Image (tube, rainbow, N blue to C red; front, side, top):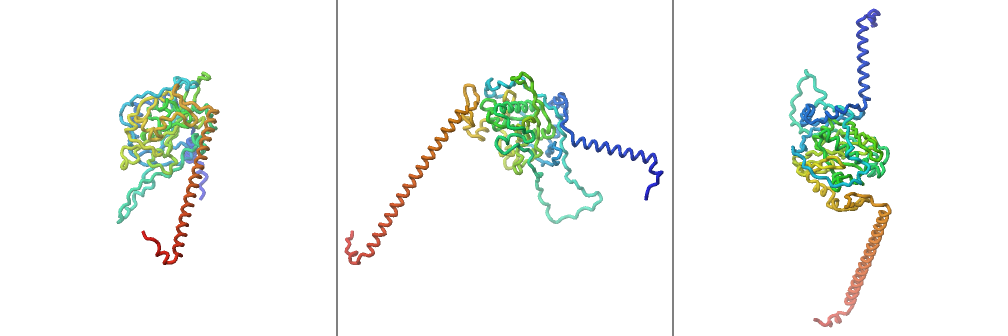
Length: 464
């Protein structure tokens, strides 16, 4: 039935329709702008306020992160699905002890010819991180209030089964070779040459350590980065990435407050004498708070990424993943296990010219991971340790080629000796086998001759 014409031109009806259209347009515009919203920059003062340790914001954050159920980290990619993370009790927070200072291994000025540690300084966060996702309700489809109660079941209730969300690989590298596997695919623009790679890693770790210090976030050196610190407080020149560890509690703070944030780092280029700036992205894996490792595709919990080159710091969280079977043991998802007494109290030191922390029992940790040779061998991966200046230097190509040729010659000679030895052993075995066969044939012939001999002749044999 069509409405009367006079009803359509009623002022109240027209006003309601106009109001409805305006509200719809405003909501649609807001939704589109949120879906396309880039990183939003905010002031230096805001970033400094975010790092104050005794503010009300810090106290509220500590209250929020003390909840046993872990909140899922924010996924800043528009198309990424919303996921729930499982509840995981925090057991890896460090004891309230003052880190013990330990001097960093000596480094020479020659290794810092193109980088000034004194001039390098971060400007901290320059992009506001997205807000964390909210957890899904326990029952997204509750029964109506007036629905009848469910009939009582005679079967015993099944035991609660912990289920973590289905995982997909979050971080993707630029290739499968050892070198390409150390670049983030999103920011990869080509392999960084050897001469510039060391400087890139230096800026990468300096920006990471100084920013975490400014934000009062505890982190310490791990794996190959810790080994480089042990030798001379610098990055190993053949290393392709950097490694750091945090507690499970710190990882949750990273996911809830700083995931997807961009950080600006300014340093003085001594070659040009000008200040240069690099930007780094703190990206937290949405599966960082999971206790299990799944299919092993998300063993890295977060990354500090150079958006210009794709080089990164791998960040892993240490949690007590089996409190009943291995109480007091914390580990990452890649099977690196530590007693808490090996880690804490952390020691204060320097790495690449900026303040850093290392585990308490660092030598024992390195020997357990790399063996005693890692602290003794002075030639490795085409580099030689010079004790006079306490630095690793790349072996000249001519010397390296000559050394490789000598090693290949030695291997060839050893191979020939081994083959000659095997031939000699085979020949010896053949001779022994031939003698054994001849002896057996002789015994057989003798037995046949005795069998053909007349009975009386056999009886005439002298007896012993």
